[in-house]
Length: 155
Image (cartoon, rainbow, N blue to C red; front, top):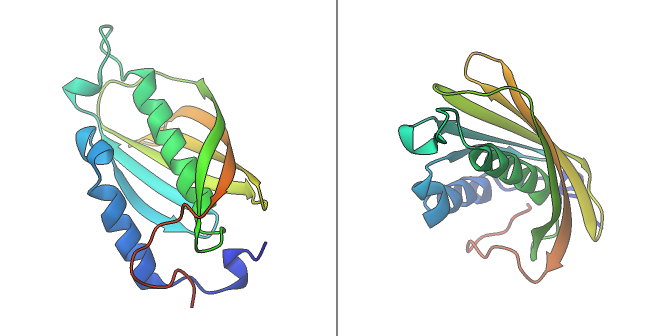
């Protein structure tokens, strides 16, 4: 597989991808933002709201899992051929500290990009830099399921 870091990624493609993701129903519902996507990395941010809290008053684990899922997916995405998407095979995470307010930042990085299977990890930190969770994801490539944004992914 030719990795994206063997080619130059089109900056306009990245901007269009960020707009597509951030204006999609699920990210808008929570809401969270895909702030950046690069070769082998991604950053996702969420401002904690009342609706993110479980009955004990801390952020629900599903919210944290969503941030890890999203950061790992997009960290692995740009190394794929143009017409290829991804799907999770598994998602593993450890919750390390509860949080009740502020912001959450997930930083993902792709550790191994393969022709069929990729492996990525993400850390979630609070806005003040406390480590909240760590997770990893195995992702399977889906040829023919890429995003058609009306422009080339690579230059």
